[in-house]
Image (cartoon, rainbow, N blue to C red; front, side, top):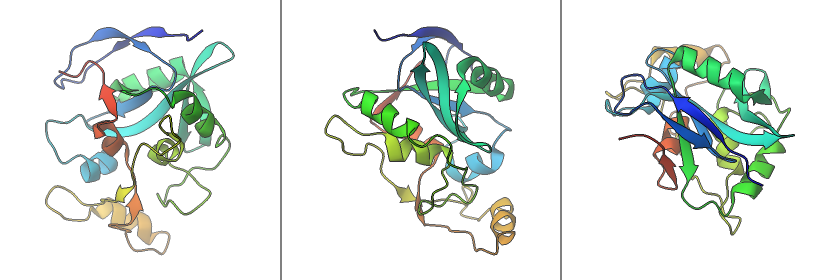
Length: 203
C-alpha cells in the first residue's frame, strides 16, 4: 500500500500559498532559500520570479518511515524526513515536485537507493564515483520504459550578466582546476523546471 504524509509547505514570499499536500514515494523535495546556497542559485536561477532552489532530495519510505534520500557533504544518505524538513525550513522553503507520469517511480527510487554510501562530489563532475544532489536524481530517474527522464545540460557557473562568479573561481582554484563552465552536468533548479514534473502549490 502506498503511504503518504500530509505536510505544510511554507513559502518564502514566492508566488505560492502555504497549504497541506501529500508527499508520495518518489516525489522530489526541493530546498529554496534567498541566502542558503547563494553561490548555486546565483549561477543557476536567472529568473527573478523563480524560487531560488539550491538542493534536491528524493522522498522514499523505508521500513514504514519516510526519508529524504539525498547527496550531502556526508555522502549519499537517508535522512529522516522530519530532520530534512526542519533543516530545509530553517533556511527557507521546501517545495515538492511530482512526476506527471509515475510509471517509473519504483524503478527510479530503487536506482537511487543503490548509490547510498557513495561520497559527495563537491566538484560537480559527472564522470566520477562521487555524486552531488541533482546528479543523484538525474542518474536514477527513468520512465516506464527505463529511459532517463532528466537530460544533462551545459553547466553554468556565471551570474545573470554572464560573469563567472568569484566563488566558483576560488572553489576550483583550490583544486587546481579551471571552472568547468559549459561542461555537461545538472542542477536542482533545472530539474525543478523540467516539464516531466509538477511543482505542487506554486501559483
